[in-house]
Image (cartoon, rainbow, N blue to C red; front, side, top):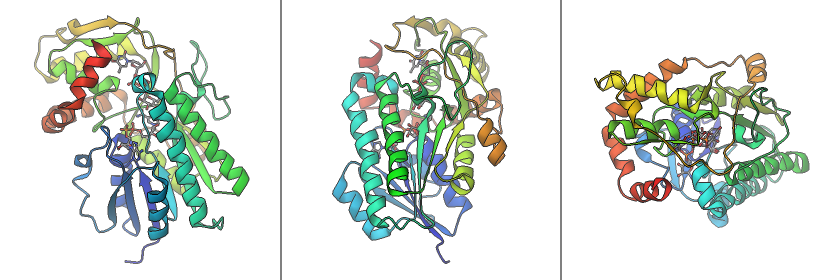
Length: 351
Ligand code: NAD
Ligand code: DAU
């Protein structure tokens, strides 16, 4: 098979990255997919056992902040395109250790940009640097309005500030060096393989174990939720059909107040676990709020819808049911990731 493109996907052992890697490996046998991941606490090769032996797939263990190593793999493999997902991704961790976020999300992105630029000596024909970002860069909304692609950046957490900074560098390389790039900013993802530090998998895990469900503040914070496989499909479309130098917002048209989402999750879990109706809701505990907690995120995804024909394929209730089923059927995965350092993290965050 003649290989048409060598695609480097960073952070491919993480939650969203693993869905993107699987989609690309299976859908494009004439691309070679290189998954570069440092395998931090959030990276897990168990997410990819079904494709690990595919002939068009190579895993590379490495850190995006390691300049010498990153330059060497670009020299060896000459990647045509990069889809950059590797990041520190959890807001609560960024509040406790902001520097780690600057290191990975800002410096790591810079190292990749420089390696990509040097590799092609600024002769970028047919090349692409695709940077995956978040709606959190826009800051917070009040009770109304939506984030569009032209909303000003106004990040509030160390995580979102580091992602905003990396977005700016990608754009700056586009302007300064004519580097072909696209950026997408997505809302909250949920689905299988998400590390149980984020709201939905954390609460599924706690419900299974009859543990408290720690809702921050009064629970009246709003997020827009998107099923992870729909995000992967959007990334595929933007990668192939997105206009160079453009940004695309991706969202689920699916806003939920945290407390309403948690109540729905409790209801669905009671049914799945054959527990008495209302029993999981009794685990809800209102705890100290997250510092700098953004009130509301909501995405206007009309650009990607109109220009690329993308829309979410599953309803929230369908997606949540699939997600719950996956966690209930993958106890082994859940036990593996919640053993060891997870216990320490949990104690520090919630005690
Ligand atoms: P994740 O935390 O599940 O995975 C991150 C992956 O990056 C892990 O596999 C980890 O090992 C790897 N990684 C971390 N530091 C690294 C380093 N220095 N070198 C190499 N690899 C490293 O994150 P996720 O939720 O899958 O998010 C992926 C990307 O999508 C991130 O850039 C995030 O900002 C963005 N995003 C996430 C969401 C969401 O709801 N999860 C929404 C919008 C955008
Ligand atoms: O919007 C996109 C972003 O969504 C991504 O860029 C981030 O990587 C991803 O982590 C996510 O950020 P959030 O902070 O919105 O997600 P999280 O799951 O941490 O929290 C969702 C909401 O639930 C938020 O309002 C905080 C609240 N929450 C969260 C946790 C972990 C609780 O009430 N209790 C909790 O224990």
